[in-house]
Image 1 (cartoon, rainbow, N blue to C red):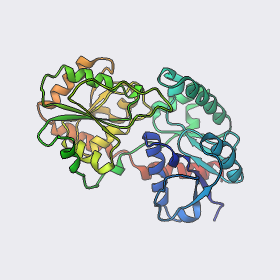
Image 2 (cartoon, rainbow, N blue to C red):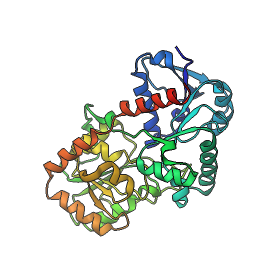
Image 3 (tube, rainbow, N blue to C red):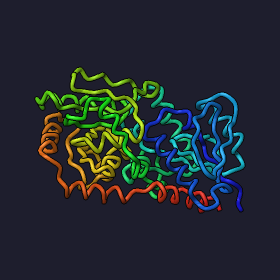
Image 4 (spheres, helix red, strand yellow):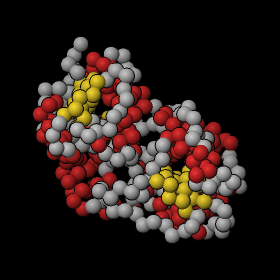
Length: 353
């Protein structure tokens, strides 16, 4: 058996968003592969959240956290091994590393980030592009990253996101009572409260729908270390539900008139697929990544046009479209954490055989 492949577990110290979801689910999928206990080891900083795994062992590396842990402590412990970094960062000097960079937002939309964060990650991405093998989550991001990092597109592999984590889980319907939604029509928007998620356009669209019993539920936390917090909508019909468990999210999606996904820029976008596996209609911003992921399984709107969004919401309030829901279920079936994990595993083996 070849030397074990080490996995950068810094993501287990970070708040959960789409990038950290990707890392958790890919590692879980790798854990299900034959001989995973011999092939992989998860390296984590002190204070990392636990990630229950059946085969892959977790090893704690003491020392300072954050980028310093990654660039110094992890780099020293992994220099003679292959390394898998799943969250867009990794030791810049590591020569046998596969790094998944999820999008080119720090290059294309630096206005959505704190200036120092955007600058640091542009520098980091450029340095990783010179030493590491890169992967990303969509064809759109593949083209974007190739352009900004001066690489050929086929030098960047594609291993997409999935919504399999929300399949076949029992919904926790207590959340509907807790948020006073049992007898109401409502829409859901899933995403942390950051400017990129553009939740303000959904609040403005709600104003155009006069039903006093209609609700708009925002599921997500405030992440202020990377971006400035988005303003809180001033409308009593908007419910700020905070971060919720997967069973609670499943229940909210199953009961919703639709999911609203109004992002300004994405490399992929997991919530539309999460909605589709729960049979929830999707209204998505008309941007390249969502078109790639959702195809004809969603209704689209210009993310700056609240009137257009209100029109799509009105369409869904008239009743579900069974054909579109079925199309969404088939669309979600195209994406699998296991298949993406297999792509990354094969890439690690073929690049450094």
